[in-house]
Length: 166
Image (cartoon, rainbow, N blue to C red; front, side, top):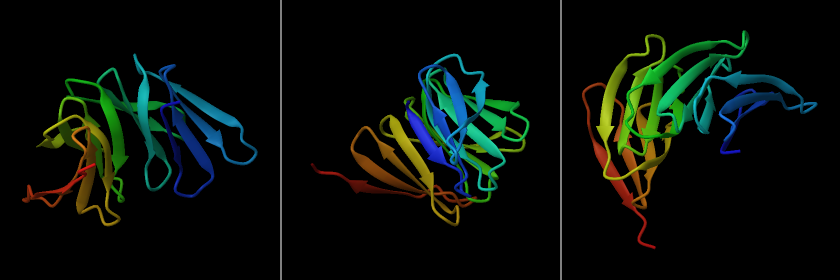
């Protein structure tokens, strides 16, 4: 298992694994509800939308898949990374999806249209991405041992760095 995530209402858990699947579990009584199949390689990251209606998954196949929880159906695939996708995260309002990849980029996507909104160039492979509570800031953790803070506001490309000197 490469990734595990609670739904925001605490009722479900999603997992991503080397068997190329995303699995959805009910927390109580711990029952498997669904298995989502569609990736061609390991699933590295999973994340629930804030309204708990969707799951997004990032994979070694360089793609991001969006799944509808109520129907169990695939909704769309986001393509554009040149190496495997290590981390995915919804903005708190569910409008934007962030993906971090070993191609040294972070991509911001419009969830409803699938359109690429912005590509942030990174100095090394991205291990993890996460939005602030208000969605205005994105943070990334990279192989270069740095934490980077990115502005997600429309006309800003600000980047700050927190260095790990250990």
